[in-house]
Image 1 (cartoon, rainbow, N blue to C red):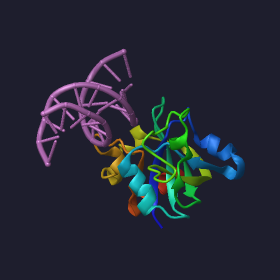
Image 2: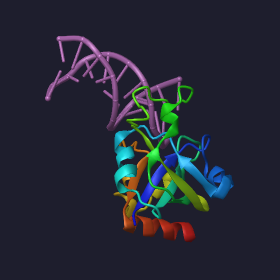
Image 3: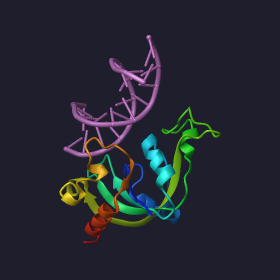
Image 4: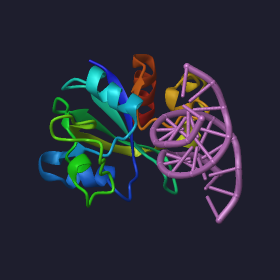
Length: 153
DNA sequence: GCCAACGTTGGC
DNA sequence: GCCAACGTTGGC
């Protein structure tokens, strides 16, 4: 059982969109960074819990919790020339990028980036590291427990 | 729109 | 394999 944080632009896919999807489940597609991909490919398992983070928006922060409900499979958008995420170097025989399906567990209050930065207990969070741009990253169990407490309070 | 930080590309 | 140029991310 591992904990993760994944970033999504709410204009593309928000926590409300996940809640509104059939079976509250959506494919997580569009990851185009090798480090993020490797976390998904090598580290994620069905049942892992994920902080759903809204990025590139007015109030960036944690907006919900989702759960990994599939093993990794090829991201379909890499094969689609019409897609923003098309990758001409990927082929069906040699896919380069993967997706996992995630299901909404719950929407939370918005725990903003600003608030996250105020807690010394979270100083070491990868998300808060200078220059951190990963869209998929692990969360330490102690960090998860602390954040879970903040979200329940 | 700015810009810091980081990743990728491609010539050599 | 180096590294300059370029592209992207993402907060502000």
